[in-house]
Length: 218
Image (cartoon, rainbow, N blue to C red):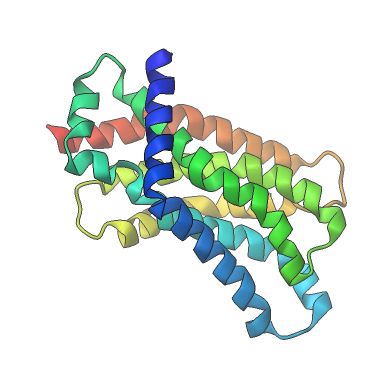
């Protein structure tokens, strides 16, 4: 367990020093939210109605934008080979790197997103359910991003391919996430579905991503 935390701390330190991936994702997210009302016009009722969906779409695209970096640097400098030969199973390495990506990119975006909602007239009663749904859904987003990054780790300019491969699997998270972001219900089946998606991906994604990485590292 100490080695897993050591891997997570290593990626957190690298992300803090380099800053590129998380900074780009946050910058992209803010740009989308700022441009949206300029494109749709000043209709406050329309903006309030679409605000949860717009914030979720901005979150999905921002997480995808940073997915390519999860394994790429470690693959290019040989660190990934050393990790694959180490005592920690590659599945747990994948899980550690996905959690580091969640902590540095997805979680900050999920926490900040509702506060950017005032730019598109987000209903204040939706802030709490939106925050809860986004924090939960962002775990699923980072894990699937790790799977896409593992599948394309050795491909040049694999970022677009990651988007094409992973984006369809984000659709259930988008549907249940938007439904769970409304304050109209206290206990939402959609929130339970988001929890099920996160738990399922927590079990299956490390196995699938590790298999993809082993295929490249042979």
